[in-house]
Amino acid sequence: MGICLTKGSLGLGVIAGFVVLLIVGWLPIVGALVAGVVAGLIARGATRGALAGLLAGILGAIILAIVLFISGALIGALFGMAGLGALLGGSLGGLIGLILTIGNAVVCLIGGLIGGALRRA
Image 1 (spheres, rainbow, N blue to C red):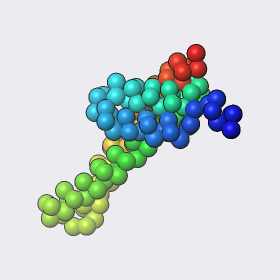
Image 2 (cartoon, one colour; image 1 turned 30 degrees about the vertical axis):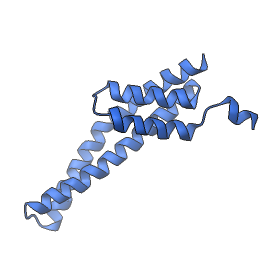
Image 3 (cartoon, helix red, strand yellow; image 1 turned 135 degrees about the vertical axis):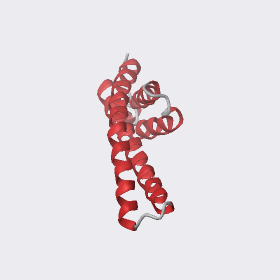
Image 4 (tube, one colour; image 1 turned 90 degrees about the vertical axis):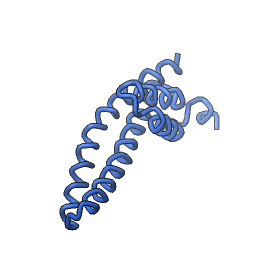
């Protein structure tokens, strides 16, 4: 029980970082950095903070890729494309979104490292 109280919760840091990323993620670099710092502050410690920030960024990237995949498929279906065309259009949009947001995951990692180091000191 004492160990749990001396270190922050990694899972809570990931969830908090993900929620902050949803709210301020539209800011190009600052949003991901802030989300990583929040995750690092909650996780406590530079290594745990970096891991929490990275996982929050990856979770955000996966959710964004799923949303882009579904929206691309719906848009393809609206324009009368066959199922295969909608699938290809949706997967292309999802792939592009996933590649772009992996950069956000790295920025979240850096923010988590900073936040964890600040909380440790």
